[in-house]
Amino acid sequence: MKKTELMKVLEDFNFRPGKILGQNFLIDDNLLEFIVRTTAPKPDEVILEAGPGFGALTRKILDAGAEVYAIEFDHRICDYLRNNLQSERFHLTEGDACRVEIAEILPPNKDFRSIANLPYAISSIYIAKMLELPRLPRQMLFMLQKEMGLRMAAQPGTKNYGALSVRAQAMYDVKLLRTVPRQVFFPQPGVDSALVDFHLKPDALSQTEGIQLGRVARCAFSQRRKKMIKPLARNYGQEVMEIAFANLSLDLEIRPDKLDTATFIALSKEIYGLLADQICSFSDL
Ligand code: SAM
Image (tube, rainbow, N blue to C red; front, side, top):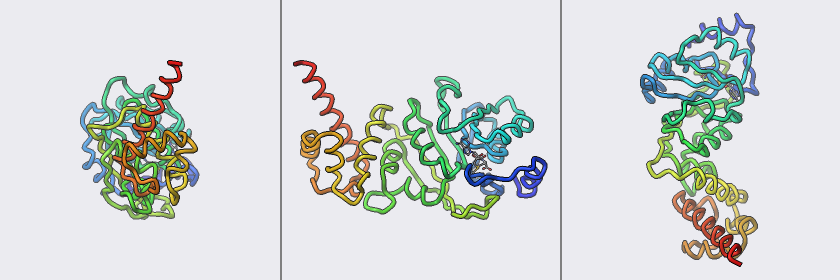
């Protein structure tokens, strides 16, 4: 959607984009084309889009023949979409993308991918939600605030590496494709953006393992500058943590930002394995 087209829509609907809902619409056709070229939507494949706005990206994905399942929170935008985006392959859910039950709106047993220019305020919650779905998107391509993009792709030992980097990289190969200047949006946000690509790993964790890893990583990073065994011991018990660290030959002094994703996964499996053994031995009493 070009800026003149968007301005006309905004004027016709007397619509003032809101900051709280992150309503910064894409007005750069080259960038939209780049997203479509990179993701190459196929006829009949299922694409989940959070926050379609006035449909700049949605129309291009539909033009490629895909089925788009979109979730939009703003009811005025939903009215616009119902009246102006009439395609049998466009399925709109009005609601909060962070709360909608994804499995209930998508066709069952079908692979899907998720593509979106995400509203910044919900991006971490939405990504965390995607990571804990029973059926994970095969690929995700998101426009994110640049800092968030850096966090997603961050490596251990860097300041951007955190719990969400661990959780995302346990499931996906994450790549920051390019940074995006604020000029490609209307209205311009106060920060730059980044396009981040997530490719599902063949050995991604199960839903339960992913949820457990999320708990361990969040707990470990609750004090990112301190020894991670401390908050973990408060949560899982000193004995469990000492055995888990010993079994993995982990340094008791290690801080969470130094631990790579593979070791986080091993630690999480170890902790929950030990807890399951404890439960079994209690039930034997
Ligand atoms: N995809 C459009 C584009 O690129 O021009 C719009 C992107 S704009 C950054 C974000 C969109 O997400 C807006 O349409 C906004 O109303 C919608 N939105 C904000 N919070 C939402 C939420 N919690 N659930 C669903 N949509 C939301």
